[in-house]
Amino acid sequence: MEGNGPYRLLRGFQAATVQRFEAGLRDPEAAQRARLAALIGGAAGTAFGQEHGIAAGMSLDQWRAAMPIRTHAGLLPWLDRVAAGEPKVLTQAAPSMLLETSGSTGRPKHLPVTPGWAASVRAAQELWMLGLLRDDEGLAGGRALSVVSPAVSARSPGGLPIGANTGRMFLAQPWWSRWRSPVPYRVFCIKDPDLRAYVLLRHALCAEIRSWTTANPSTLLLYCRHLRRFWEDLSRDCRDGTLKHGPAAALGAWDRLRLGWGSGRRALPPEPLPARIWPLRRINCWKGGSAAFFLDRLPAALGAPPGADIPVREVGITASEGFFAVPVDEGDPLLWADGHVLEFVAEDGAVCWPWELEAGREYRLILSTEAGLYRYDLQDQVRVTGFTGRLARLRFVGKSGNVLNATGEKVSEEQIALAIREVFPAAAGGAASMAWGEVPRFRVAVEGEAGDDAAQAARLDAALRRLNPEYDSKRETARLGALSLSRLPAGSLAAWRAAAVRAGAPEAQVKDPWVLSPERWDRLVSGAADAR
Image 1 (cartoon, helix red, strand yellow):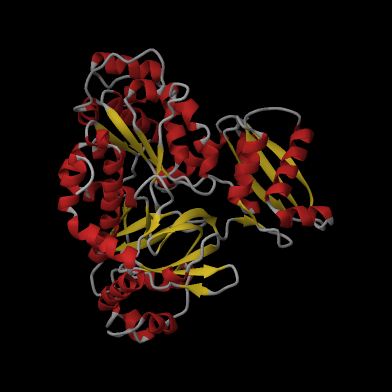
Image 2 (spheres, one colour; image 1 turned 90 degrees about the horizontal axis):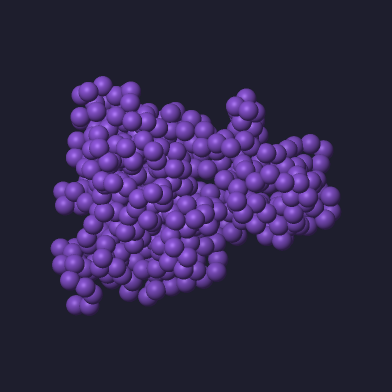
């Protein structure tokens, strides 16, 4: 067996998962039929199954014909019955908890977790970890820093625990994997975001961190800012082996002992730069869609020496709803045929199975899972970038609904982020919305990097015209007006994220406000103006 010693050892423990993955490479149709059979076994006889005629022996095409594609809103009446504690609504297996995800706007989504679903997600995680270890034996040593949210933060009307998938996955890891985290789980459950960040860094600074993982790269930048902000206080606490400075000064004696236990002691280097504090070998986070805006800023924020940037590994095409494509090397994630039943809606509306995908085309992802999400429209747009065996490599493009569109231009959040990055390379971020009128126009707000608003607005408009031919056409024919540019004061986007966390959104999954409805735009801009 090829690979280094730690990889071969771990692969031996996970041989069954690897064998299923390799079988899917050769025959994705057989893998999907097997997933459907397992899914039907859990759906037949439920309230949903009876209404839709779900029965053993259904083919993939019969499954597709049995029910329409649904968004979360279409499945919500069934999910509400699950949350109320009614048994056998969507699955024969009783859900162990509900995952909370903010999704888009409005009411949070509460998604059931069942044993079969959890096993599928765990298998995808195992493959991801195997690939990491195969490519870098050094990751077998040291500590692995992750940023997660609490696994339980509330209860449903029926008494089910509600929490974040990141926290659930953290607690589901084997003990030896949890031991590699320098941060005790209790720290992730601190409610105050400043105190949580301070205590997390207090533990991490005294550990030998070799990898740093979180879903959103903007979270990495946020913690780099926290590190600079609290540096003097953290340096004193690390030097003295205490937890009594900065936000921790308000803690009582018991909480100081409980939260600081095991944090260690260390004399820190003079600069608050993670790459000079830790022997970082790998960053793991999203890389698709608008994430590129933040990834460009990571090397400077981490402080890696010139020419020695830390490699960034994709964490996969994944969400609270499931795991759909697994990074097994440095390339784009590979479709996970042995996880959930997957369908893909092409731009012309055709619905395709995984083995019908074509390189270079974009699709909207539809999934059916053992947790009761049946033909569920995730509204994630993915691009097929190639194939390994018969499995497609996928790249996340963005939310299919997260576009600015008044006259058919459909400008994506990825294109907004790319244009802002081009014109404002040092900006902290930005947001865009539609200004409706007789001639609609885009409005864009940017945090940081002052300059000539009129000139930069014109450059931003030109960048969008180059990135999106339909936008260019609509501007050329005056069906869209020239965009307007606003400035956000420093800290506005961080305050937006903090408000979302205080409202209950999992910190590691808070989305950045690239494309906003007019109402959310008004809240962002007016809130920033009030803070001036």
